[in-house]
Structures are given as C-alpha cells and as structure tokens.
Length: 384
Ligand SMILES: Cc1cc2nc3c(=O)[nH]c(=O)nc-3n(C[C@H](O)[C@H](O)[C@H](O)COP(=O)(O)OP(=O)(O)OC[C@H]3O[C@@H](n4cnc5c(N)ncnc54)[C@H](O)[C@@H]3O)c2cc1C
Image (cartoon, rainbow, N blue to C red; front, side, top):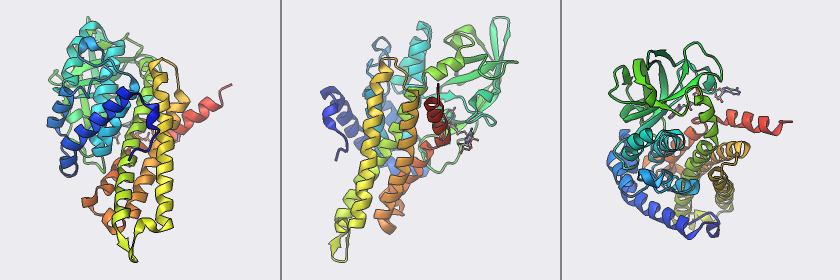
C-alpha cells in the first residue's frame, strides 16, 4: 500500500525506494523487535547497507558515494524508518549530519579520510551539538577550544548524542574560549582513540532503542588545523545553512513510522472479527483509518516537495520547520490510533505498534522540539 502520488516520483526514485524496502524487510524486519528489546545497533546490517550503496547516497561519486539528490536520501531513510526507525535515525546521522557536512565544507583531505569508511558501512559517525545545559538554546553551548601554538585544545561535554557509544568519528561544535552567542563557533572532526576523548555508557531510552545515544567528553583534546571543518569561526553559520535538510530528514523519520502504523492497522482491521464482522466495517474504525491516511499523505507530499529546493540551494526555512512539526505530531497521533484500532493486541509488544509509538515520540523532541519549530515558523511569518 503506497499512500503517495507515486506518479510524482521518477522511475529511478521508485527503484531506489523499492530496493531499499526489500533490503530493509529482509535484513531489519526479522530482527527489529529483538534489537529494540536488546538496545543493540545492528552493525551487520549497517555493513550490508554500505555494501548496497544505501549510506552514501548523497556523497560525491569521487569519494565512493552515488552523488544522488536529497529526495533519494529521504526515500532510503523512509524505508529504513518504516521497519526499524532507530536504524534509520542512526544511518541518517552518518549520511546527513556527517558525510553531507564533510562533502559540502571539508577539504579534499577530510573528504578522503572520513567519507569512505562511513559510506562503506565500516564506521559510524556522530554529530555533537547538544550539551547538558544547552538543548533548544544551542548557542549557549560551552564546549570550547583554545589555540596553543599550531594546536587547538578542546574541552567540554556533549550529551544525547546519537551513535556516540559506538561511533568512530565525531563532528563536534565548539566555540573559541571567551566568545558568546552566535560568534566563535567552529566545527571539529574528531576520532575515537584521540587522547582526552571519551564516551559514556549508552542511555536507556523509551524508543529508538536500537540507535545508541550517549555522552561525549573532551578533556584537553589537542588537534591540528586540518581537523577543522570549513573556516574557523564559521561553525554556527555552517550549522544554520544545513538545517533545512536536517529538518526535512527529521520529518521523513516520522513518515516512515506512520506508514508502518497504517499498514499494521489496515491489515489487522480486516482480519479481526468482532460482532461477526471484520472491525474495518465499523465506521468509527474507518474514521480513524481515513484520518491517519490523510494526515500521512499530506505530510509526505509536502515534505518530499521540499527536497529539490535543498538540492538547488534555495532556503525553505519555514517550510522545513512546518514539515518536521506536522510530521512528528502526525506520527505520534497515527501510532496511538493504530494501537487503538488493534485494541489489547496493539498494546502487546508482539504486534510492533507500541514500538512505533515509542519511536514516534522522539521526533517531536530531537533535532529541535515542536515548540522551537513553531517559533521558527512564526518568526518567518512575522518578518517584515
Ligand atoms: C534520542 C535522542 C537523540 C538525540 N541525538 C542528538 C544528536 O545526535 N546530536 C545532538 O547534538 N543532539 C541530539 N539530541 C538532542 C536534542 O536535539 C535535544 O534533546 C533537543 O534539541 C531539545 O533539547 P533539550 O532536551 O535540552 O530540551 P530543552 O531545550 O530543555 O526543552 C525542554 C522543553 O522546553 C521547551 N522550550 C525550550 N525553549 C523554549 C522556548 N524558547 N519557547 C518555548 N518552549 C521552549 C522545549 O520545547 C521542551 O518542551 C538527541 C536527543 C534525543 C532524546
């Protein structure tokens, strides 16, 4: 069941989507419940995804990627998230929040060293912005660096970092010691094993449990200028320039989860007999299904419409926030309705929709909460 205007996709896009769907169902499908229960990231599937070209879709061809557009990246992510959302989120950190940044702003040396191991599925990457005291107010971050001769010495702590417990590479946002606000931000590419860099234990989470989340500690980590991504002092600008894509990909996470919920609810409602009829013949159940499908369709069409704008470098700040805000709220609602349609069985782990609901809630928080998205929408609306 495809709740989208398929005709709007090119043949190539449809092929990528269908191949990824088959890959996800075959590799993630049988283990999705188990990796959620065990809080285990399936490194073996990540490796296979790399071998199948599903991690580096948007990375340049000369570094082993496919040089594909943002919509391709979105379609791949939706299919991963439909089966195991945490896997889709972890992979997206590597594809979008690491490789995309390195490809766009990195030196040839950084691209050569860091893109291939990630897109081949050998190494995971993490994007480290949030700190214990700096969440929505990201510009209040305190992780800082000082120049000592030709070295840059970093100190600070990051938290809630996706992939941190098992990542090989860390893209860290730090500020020059003594600066405040939007000034002095710089992005550093760090590696596990560097002296002074350590990570905490994985956090226990409500959802997205196969995606490991944790802390990163920097205690006098000393690196050369070659580990800086883009220009020194332009770190916050680089972050802002890539926010549209990040938010669109956040919305995609929710779209994948909602698709899975609807498929489960439709199937169940046709099979479940009560009062001598399948429950899908009851109009109150149909009402829920119709609401769910309508909201998902609107969300998907709107979100995917934005992808080509990012490719063309056109800012869609307000629309990307709308997409993420709408999709994340939609997916939580759709997941709750799927549970409702499935009654007591929906509440049981065996039927997966309770997992979808736990996963869906994260997107209302991570990558900028719904409240922050609405602030951005209003700010854009009220611009003179
Ligand atoms: C599973 C998971 C994975 C994550 N992965 C990463 C990652 O890989 N890298 C990374 O850097 N970060 C990551 N994060 C962090 C995430 O981006 C932050 O949790 C998010 O930005 C919110 O910050 P906070 O949790 O500190 O909440 P807070 O900022 O403390 O917000 C708490 C509440 O206050 C509200 N609020 C705050 N300010 C305002 C305001 N001005 N107006 C109205 N309401 C407001 C918020 O909307 C929210 O409801 C992750 C988080 C989770 C849970």
